[in-house]
Length: 277
Ligand code: AMP
Ligand code: MN
Ligand code: MN
Ligand code: MN
Image 1 (cartoon, rainbow, N blue to C red):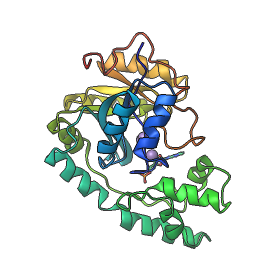
Image 2 (spheres, rainbow, N blue to C red):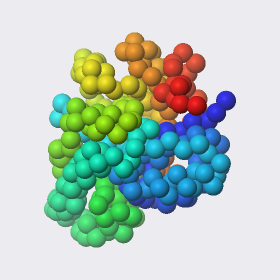
Image 3 (spheres, rainbow, N blue to C red):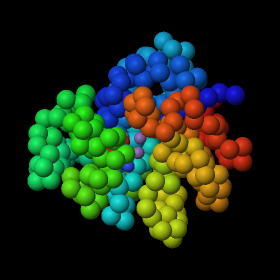
């Protein structure tokens, strides 16, 4: 059976490895079909595609786009996109454009909470100056000993209601699914189990997404707990979605599972890749 992993990050967004190094790491983890899905950015795809070919992996173009839905940040993965499609690249450029300003505001809030120099500190971890992320701040706060690990940083800082949380208006669900579809891609709701929606709101998100032409949800992801795999498999079937799978790898040791340890999709779902090869 092919091992398919359709969600991970390089240092073109908030991962720590180059696209080439992520490709090698994915291959080491047994991946046969691989997508790099950097946040709001397709700048790593050319290198990733070449590296995948070198590693003998089948490559799938991808991106993970931040949206705001019902006042919450939700992530939509686009797969099999034409990464050069002007509708997509213009949309992504627009949503990236607020990140530096937001990063400076995050740093101001952290300074008020007693953590100085966070902008410069986070910048040391940034591979792409257009894409300053909360993850870069989290790595800096761990570095200086303000927190023991990344998860603690998000608990104490950077999350809603905490110092260092700066609300940001990303794009809408409709426009984002529109960009992905314009670029010939398949839209997937990333790690649906991670959002704090009520069952009702989650159902509304799924219905709206499907009406817009969204095709799949992630079922097995490093951002779900193992008990969420069967739960979201059932929801995928109930709502008529295909199922996707991906580690959401950012850095060695930073998340619960790596490429190698992520289990396969449950047998009762239809994989998003069922008609790709
Ligand atoms: P941003 O796009 O700058 O808002 O950053 C979002 C990124 O922060 C996500 O893609 C994750 O990589 C990371 N993140 C968000 N929440 C958490 C969390 N609770 N624990 C670890 N990483 C998180
Ligand atoms: Mn991330
Ligand atoms: Mn995500
Ligand atoms: Mn991700």
